[in-house]
Image 1 (tube, rainbow, N blue to C red):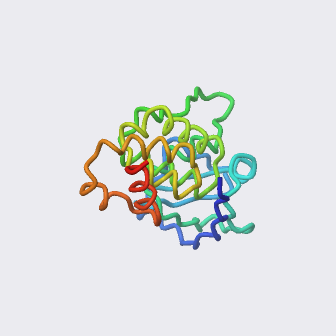
Image 2 (tube, rainbow, N blue to C red):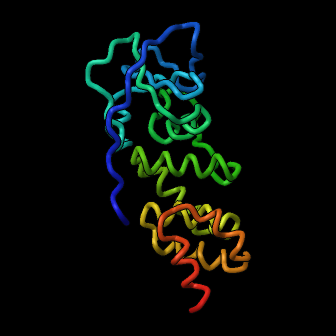
Length: 189
């Protein structure tokens, strides 16, 4: 598996109370960092949770409480991502989201975010689901994701699942560089 580069620090933005809502699940006022989604939902996260559960977040050390780290992902993606990073308080009942219940678009956005921010527990869940279910259900999207992130075994599974789909439909769906060549090569093995 190829290593995913650590993303650079996201830009900071001023928090204007009338321009965002706070996630009902990630709203602890004592959290040191506020992340703002692309659709203006704020997520309040403890730095210690980021350090322990993600190797890809590197927010600035001294963030003013009126600033937020701006992230390009939408709140539905971040809600799931932070569920694998930020553990609830002792008094809260908590269960991580069932990834199998996610619709196709959201699953692949979450899988990409897990890779981008290096959230190992979520990366493992996504690749497991890809290998047992999603490679067969969504072979082209799975093949793109697996090839992009170096999951060769799962990429092979997805490629074999895609063999039943006409080649003319595949060319527009295979977006990762080199995947089309690998897919066509399998047709002639």
